[in-house]
Length: 98
Image 1 (tube, rainbow, N blue to C red):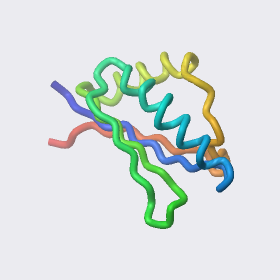
Image 2 (image 1 turned 135 degrees about the vertical axis):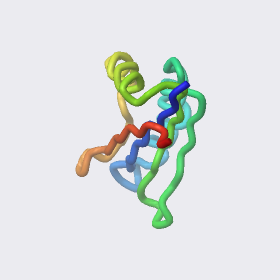
Image 3 (image 1 turned 60 degrees about the vertical axis):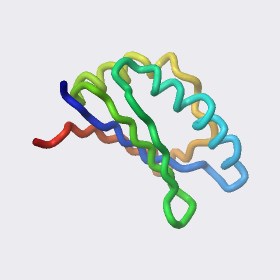
């Protein structure tokens, strides 16, 4: 079965908004992504400067399928809380190599 990663880089919009941002991400948004069909794991990382987060979601299907599932689910997901939009979050999809 194909495997892929969905990688998202985000940050809170301010130091004051960081607690609400992390609460939304940890207690709402991670569960929304883990509920997508084929999502097998999720992990968040914090940059060494403490300002940027990287979320890595592993799927048991190819990246095109993940894009379609995420795109279909996104309109029904909870509104992001205190996410920095300048620069906006970055999202990348990767298929397993080899």
